[in-house]
Image (tube, rainbow, N blue to C red; front, side, top):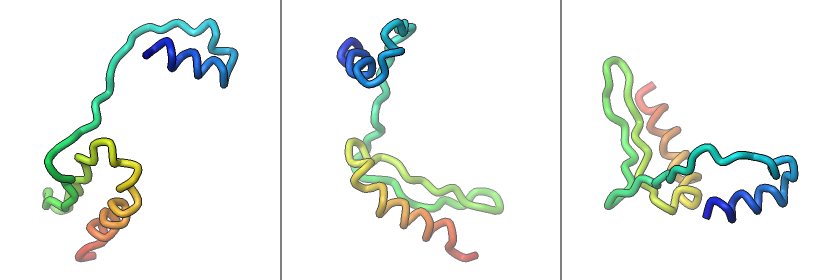
Length: 76
């Protein structure tokens, strides 16, 4: 998989042809039974949780961003 990604990147940017792979790691998408989108009181402010979208992050981002703005402005 790393070779395929690097090959495609080199097609776009030939200067990467001599790039050295230092390490290969995997980023996992956080997943849970349902999205957590809520405000939690924290000191004199609040912490807005917005995670657990799994592979639907891009699809849900617009609506969730709107809800985060609403939560951030609540009671202000």
